[in-house]
Length: 320
Image 1 (cartoon, one colour):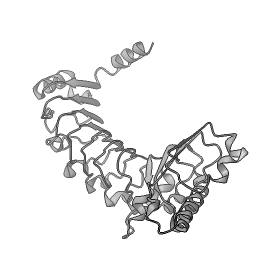
Image 2 (cartoon, one colour; image 1 turned 60 degrees about the vertical axis):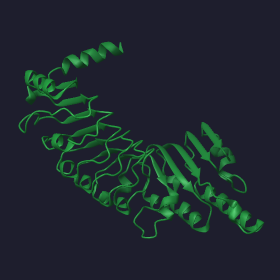
Image 3 (cartoon, helix red, strand yellow; image 1 turned 180 degrees about the vertical axis):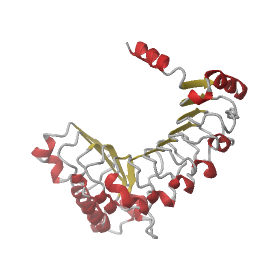
Image 4 (cartoon, helix red, strand yellow; image 1 turned 45 degrees about the vertical axis):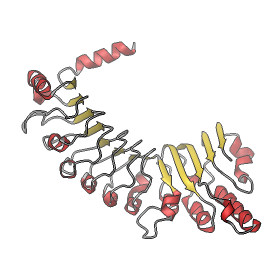
């Protein structure tokens, strides 16, 4: 049944959608035969070192979805391709060799709603010009392992509703605080990174209080430490108010208790970890809770609470 529906959908979209694997000359001949003004969806699959050249400046003006599957291509000529697009709404790129995104071209794609760079594992940075995409609703940078930070101007993306950043950067610029209350997806947040932010350019754990019930799905807090500052920030975060979160993972930092000068110092750190965990109490309708690397004095009281345990479906304790 699934194959029948898929084939029927392809039949309906045969003059509007094009999936192509080949060289530039062949793709342009195919576009010409189908009529470039009818094509709205174009996906190119390339195994070559160069991206096929697509049309001229007057072609593909009605194109609103462009997908590029080029695992071995550096996409050095991506800027030329993007410069020919006028009304594209969806941009999806898969490349294991792409290091940078052309800054001059992508910032001019003012109609973009969805940008997907997931699995571009060597992508090192996003250009500041991406922050000029005021209509952007979704940004997917999942599994971009080399990406360490986001542009400082992310605060301008006031319409952003979904940020998929699992396996990628979790350094979030302070400007994003402006629209946290509207954010529906945020894959992960690194508490440890924000604590090293002496210039206050990144969001802190306490800033997550602005995330409310609009946040949906899975949420990961990484690099949690035990200390007085962490306790205060954890209380401000108000995880109980994030009632849309179905999976919560709390990953504690691998702190070396051996650096403490005495047993009292070790005990104080363990007590602070317990207080942090107490403050990070999630809402009672959570479906799955995962706790990694927790080494506190004991577990938080809410974990053993009958009211809380009666609702959670899965509890995972790892290296605790």
